[in-house]
Length: 449
Image (cartoon, rainbow, N blue to C red; front, side, top):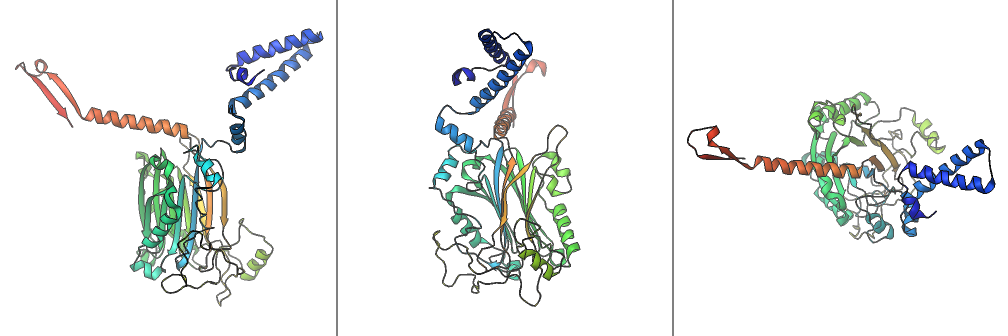
């Protein structure tokens, strides 16, 4: 039986007819009279044909593309997101941001293959991403300087230049030393239907932005996203203050959502389909330093990477945050690689190594008629071998979220049709017969705007 004939089998009735014919031929040839053997043969051949049928329905006719599709499954129901967070200790990193953010190798074979089925992407953990988000704390300047001069123009310029034409910068948000940037893959720029942004200060007297949270929400197709970058209260004993910061940000961040019913939600993380919250959370390991050091040596870790705080500074920079001599803008310049061995706080305070830098996430609770959306973690890691000009190490993650591209496309088309129809209805000329409204016999033309 050929692949073409199998592809033409579009119903179970036809499939069962083929099974019965095959069984009858086999029975006639072998003169089998036992009914139990007949039933077993029918079930066996039916299962075999069902398997072959399902296989050929999902494999392209071209053998090369068939092998490719088996190695890289279609991602028709997933959207790929990259998130990076880093406390930069008041500095600017070199122009080459790898491995914090890998170089965009647009001329590589892998990149070109990925872009062939845009906007769909396979489930690898490399460029391109549908959405790329970078959140930084103590970025470009220290906290004191940033309270008075919060601009992150140079950092934004570096990010945009580094990512090149592959990504489009949708929105940035800045508060003192906090910065958040949301990029979208250029191939799906038109999927962005709207965005919102806001900031909440939780620092000195709950008024200053030396601590707090900033957020950007995004409507991608008909699916809503919320990205929050925060820097919470420092010091080992400030657990209650950190919890207070989280509650304040959750309640006061004015990201209203994109549906009428979203506004009624008190917690900002309940107004969106997907929420990613990241940054320097400052939550500490509540154990003695000596015990934590021993656990690190044994690699007995609560998370799948080493604690990201607090490290000794091993790479000093000048007062204007430039390398001496400055590194070239060329992307082939040295990456953020540190060759020196890692050393946790060796100063008099002996701070306990902790996972202060995190990426956490949640999905909106399902509606009465819908199912809860899922977030799959493709990769979640820190970068320990990064250049040691900060006492923190960056954390990055690649995530795959439920996103039905075909359904979203249909919903967008329906939405556009409704808007066009509303525009036509709002700008229309109605002819009214005066005999129904007056005795003048004239016709009244009414223009409704």
